[in-house]
Image (cartoon, rainbow, N blue to C red):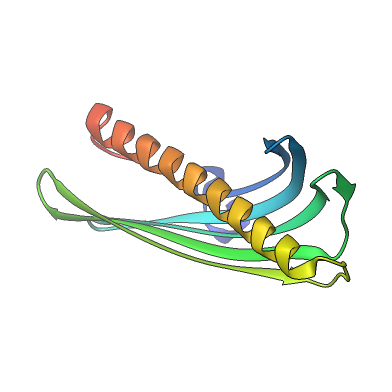
Length: 138
């Protein structure tokens, strides 16, 4: 990262496996993310792209289900003490598997992934809010 003129703090990557229990069934997804923070006058942009692979769902080992996502978070200072937050996200889930109840599986999997993203976004907003209130900068 340093050879590109960016400090390590401005770029990040992360890989982790998330497990969650939904209605008594294990849901396990492996995620990989890379991101970058861009700072200029009165604005900060966080760009994150990631991939996920579903490993277990509803009590069964799963293969052939992958997700791709891009996320932009823009903080712009409109005036001293007033910051506007814009959030954009796109996510695609690819199902390359044959199942007897495929549509039900697709619908339920998308519902759970959407719930996980909402929970993650709420945590991001809380972190941004806390940073703005306590430190007055990100």
